[in-house]
Length: 317
Ligand code: G3H
Ligand code: 13P
Ligand code: ZN
Image 1 (cartoon, helix red, strand yellow):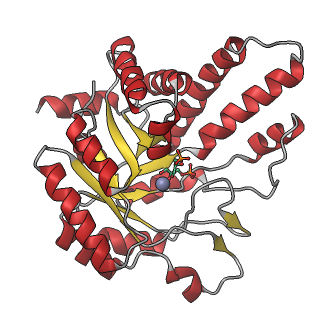
Image 2 (cartoon, rainbow, N blue to C red; image 1 turned 30 degrees about the vertical axis):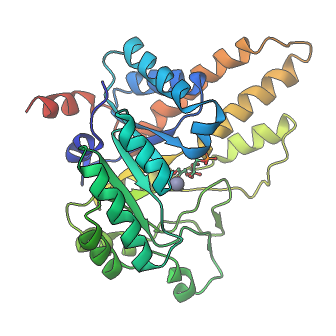
């Protein structure tokens, strides 16, 4: 059942985080639904602009609507990831999306506010919620001085002003993570001091953590052992930090890269071990099962595993 993103946030806020997983095709979607049903977790499906172009936005919608029929007990929201203004309007008008992200974080504060406010007005008129972003995600290096390191993190004082002026429903904040497989050099940790300050500055507004993949070492090693050439220093967020962050208000945790690593490992190993094979269904099937396992394990770390019935009960109130 597709629900609003705010329905999920209401149950999770301050207690656990909802996994927001990017999907691009049918195999990923099957694995995602299977993993969330196995772990009895509510979830958010995210669709990026790239995903909407990869096949076709209508194809993705049809795949998700089919998955909803195949898994009638699933409870999830559909979200546009990193939207520009035009794509946000397309999603708002489609009647399919539960929420959109307007990412104008590259603009200065005033422009970011103005663009976000326009999207919020149009989305709210249709009952759709909006995630917006301030601060810039970046790498965190051990040898960068704290001041420099904090320079691109979200300023809690600005966060208050931004939420007040835009009326956005959730705030993507830069709290020490970055997108992709190479997030940290040296010691890795989220900036809990900043998360706590933002959480206290905007109580009740869910914080969104982008760039949350954990980039498991063994996954990188297996990919390289099967012919990959990933930089072995690739590393991500410590999964044991998801739940402490959730308790401070981080309610949506975005994960894409880790799923891509599962895909790459499964397919590289399959074709290494079966060099004469050319039917893509056997590795596709293995990927669905491995992706489901990965999602279920991730949901345990996020605290969303086992929360499906609590969400269902809250929806009836
Ligand atoms: O944050 C970006 C997501 O990982 C989506 O990536 O734009 O390559 O689909 P994409
Ligand atoms: P990762 O690259 O860490 O998976 O982050 C994904 C993301 O933030 C999608 O918006
Ligand atoms: Zn992101």
